[in-house]
Amino acid sequence: MGTNRISYVPLEQMDERMQEEMHRCAREGTPRPESSAVRAQAPNAFWAFADSWKALFHSGVCDHAIKELCRVYISRTVKCEFCGNQRSLKATAAGLQEQQYDELLNFETSDQYDDRQKAALAYAEAIAWRLEPTDELWDRLHAHFSEPELVELGCCIALTFGQQSWIRLLGIDHHEYLAGTDASMAPGFRTAEELAASKASADYWAAGAPR
Image (cartoon, rainbow, N blue to C red; front, top):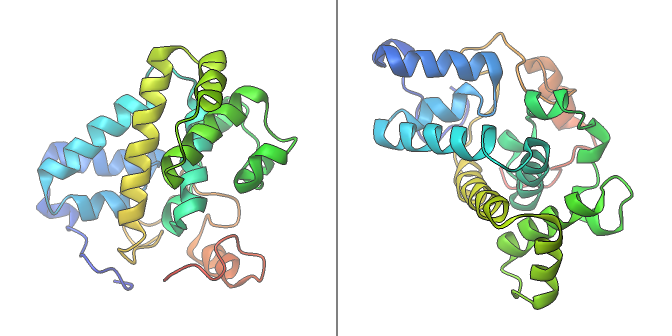
């Protein structure tokens, strides 16, 4: 199906616990079922990611909306379209607005983010772009986050960066596996038809991205 370079594992070939997780992905998203169906080729990798993602992204001591901004910042940085076209339902419920995704790559000069959010995004930027670990960066981070929060956020960003760098290569897309739900899809991507139209638009955020 599609142009995916590693095939999806059919749902009927999964055990009951894995099927339950796949249905959760379809119902709640982040991650959506397509990437999980690829990871299911290696059940140890499937559960290593699912458990880590639940612990670092969906749970923990650092506020979820901060982690969601960092997740999508990484999507924009590595141009992972699959991940970048998703939104966290939990973050939306917490008040994160769609326009706050639009200026992520220019976060320092944007008025869409407060100082704490900008510090977190600077952390993501430093990890993604291998920036120098300056005293200024660390003073800024310690001013806004506790050390447990910095550890959790750093691990979440690192996991996001590694996974999205890989997912970008897979050629997978939404609405290809357990289709029929729009859970966690960004506006304009909630159906296969919307997704195709948005990607064809001249102002699509990943225009010119590697395919």
